[in-house]
Every structure is written in structure tokens, then in C-alpha cells.
Length: 204
Image (cartoon, rainbow, N blue to C red):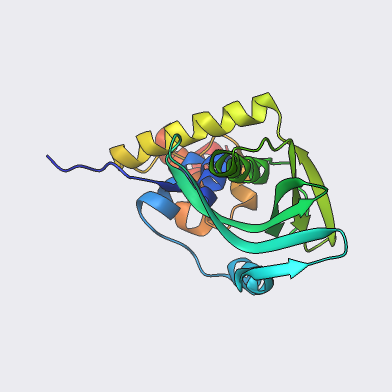
């Protein structure tokens, strides 16, 4: 019997799972990604922090591209930036767009903080997401509810990876419209097949 267990889930894949389990299935289980203008722009935007290194500011120290992991949750990946200010450390995640209605970026940031806490033994109360579209940081409070969500996402990611089966589309069509994988996923077509009716019959 084939063993589909995964040692560690990448932090970015928790973001995908929080958005949509099917997106997680495409990106992690099947390792499929559509290369479009959004993916290319995101890669270019990240070049500064992806170089790594330490930056000393007047009142803070910034470590770029910091590898972190959690042995308890079996998740691992890179923090774009770990900043230490007034003795407090916190992760900063960089995103190409602007703050949206979906909070999957918050889950990824919280996962980074949980890994940092496990590695350093220090408590982290908040983190930040820098959106290139607004050129501003959004503060994210790492609440008990958000932490619990990340723990559930970690367990679910391992469960889905072990199954190795592509989950069905999300029940939220608005997320499908905002998703770069929509041309690959074809969620509307799959919903029609599930209903057993072709598009022209549904419009009558």
C-alpha cells in the first residue's frame, strides 16, 4: 500500500487551503500552477525580500527570508521578513495586491508566527502584511480564534495530502471569480455536471 503521508506542509499551502481546498489540491497535491501576469508580478515583487540578509534600521532589525518550521504542526516555510523592534519580534508577509475580503493571508501569517514561537520560545501577539498596491502594512492580531484556525488547517492539509484526492470546488462562486486557477479548475462547469443539466437548460 502506497504511503502518501507528507512530513511537512509548506506555509504558503495553508494560505491556499484557507482560500479553497480545491486550490490546495491543485497547488500541493497535483503540483499544478498557472503562470499568468498575477503570478509573475508576485514573483517580481518578492525579489527584494527573497534575497535574504539582515537590515539594520534606526529602531529595528530586519531579517529577510527566514526559514521557520513547527515540529508540532508539521508545517514549514519562509517568512518574507522577521522584524525585531523594542525587543519584540513579529513576521511581515509581502503581498502584491491589496487587502481583500478573504482572510487567507492572515492564516499564512499566523502560521509563520506559530513557527517562530516554537523556534524561539517567545510569544508573538501580532504580525503585519505589507500590500504593494497600497504601500501600507496591515496589522493582524494573532487571536486565539486565528491560532485555532491555523491548527485546524494544518491537520486538514495533512489529511487531504494523505488522501491524494482533488477536493470539489468551493461553494462560494465569488472566490472562484477571484481565483487565478479558475481556468484550470472550471468550477462552474463542474457545478453544472453535478446538477445533471447543461447550461442552456439551466437558463430556461
